[in-house]
Image (tube, rainbow, N blue to C red; front, side, top):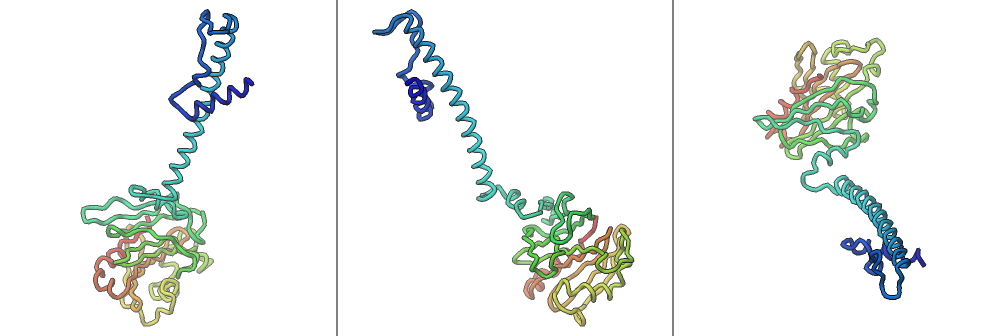
Length: 277
């Protein structure tokens, strides 16, 4: 019977948080017996009611902690799986193996992306250390999921896009795939001259032979590192190639005919901004 009273009191408290104890179990002051209750019995009732009240409060505290845990889990779930306004960072962070790396826009509205040091290796690149890279894009370019079915296969490390302007891809491949004679500190010159590099690796970017498609070929140098820069047509694509550590980097910027016509200047600026840092 006592157990029933305790449970009833706790259930009453849970259903009405404004009450601490069910009124039917009020505490009787010592020396002020109720009708039909002696002083001894009143004291015993008082102690019993105090114990019930304390037990209920303990149960209430446990309930509050459980409710807080459930509420916290619900909040996290709502942010991760149903992101709303103001959750762009969380939403971007959900892309597998990706960590946001874009800077704030500069005075011209351009952002700089730097591959985060703690980002996983992408498809096929693995978890071994690699030199990070950077490039600049106008505002409203965003990282998009990488598919191993895309051109470039398992070695695509990153994709960016703007539906109105074009697309970017970064292929990062181990140099040992091309030659066992290249050491752990490779340079693009060791892999070959520009013509050899574009003939060998251009098809990995555009999915077809590049013979007769190279409109422009240049060599640039930044902080002692050589970059081969190519422009191909068709399709409309610019490729920047370099090497660092034990990796070959192929950075490509592409667009359809209309995007090429309207945004050529910006697309070329993006292609020429690529750096291994």
